[in-house]
Amino acid sequence: MGNRRALEEAFPLLLQEARTLGEPLSLIYWDLNGLKALNDREGHAVGDQALKSLAQALRNLSRRRDVAFRIGGDEFVSLHLGLKAEEIPALIARLQENLPYQVAAGGLLVEGEDLEVLLKETDKRMYRAKRARKGL
Image 1: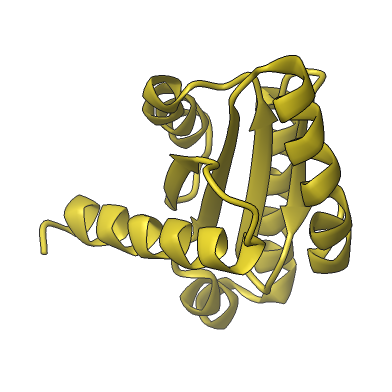
Image 2: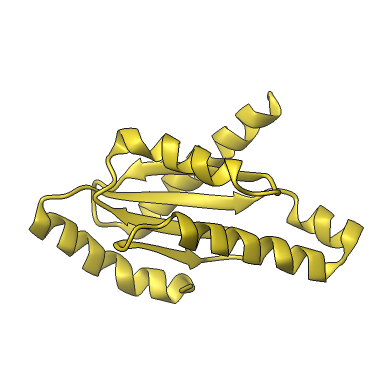
């Protein structure tokens, strides 16, 4: 799984491929909820296992043309070539159903070339989803 730098290198290439093929490109921002509390309660080995579980779930969920990146402590981003906007919620739900840990996510169809703007927007969507799951 790539890191933040790999995301920054891969994004323009995938965006160009999407445009060349005339296919959508979707970006999803993932967050493992409660990692600090898990580390504090059960130890860092358990927290590390939770991160590995999320990374593996992202790999298992992915199709051949999907890529995922760990961009922060408990934050991941995935890019999905050919995934339409209306398909994003089902993909998020499928991953959430198959993990023993709570994961929040927000996604969008990529429109524009500024990765930072897209990351900020998907981060906002992820936090809205997190608050909605908590009933806030």
